Image (tube, rainbow, N blue to C red; front, side, top):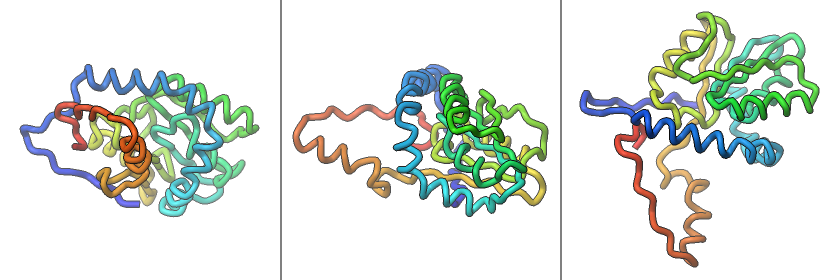
Length: 201
């Protein structure tokens, strides 16, 4: 994994409160589908999860924080890696996602996973609490990615690892455009306007 950051000039601004609220609303509304298809999602992103585990050097007995864990992955997979002597804390800004993750953990009989609803840039944990901190495909959606990264570093123990998986520009990420391109051959699709002052555009 690589930590990718972009320099911002003084004139750059992050998303507005309205834009942030809209993104959170969309995640709340989609939570039920993430829960419904969690098995498919787990399988689809298993290589990314495994890469995070390897890059963060996660082993049995460690304490791991999963930031923006959504409906439970990669937290639940990591829980199997750290085993009964380790622990995983799954966080997400969306209450419905946290509820879905907790339900899946209970269904799978996992007892070494805790759950917290919180934003990535305001983690409610003591400094140096975790051996490793991971975030799988979440950092792109943070209203303030740098503030979130500072928080992740703060709660990581000295000598610990922060491991992030993010996607690059859409033209370098076939997953984001192959299906859309096929659909566009048969239907006229009006392109959406990008959000103004988006921090990752």
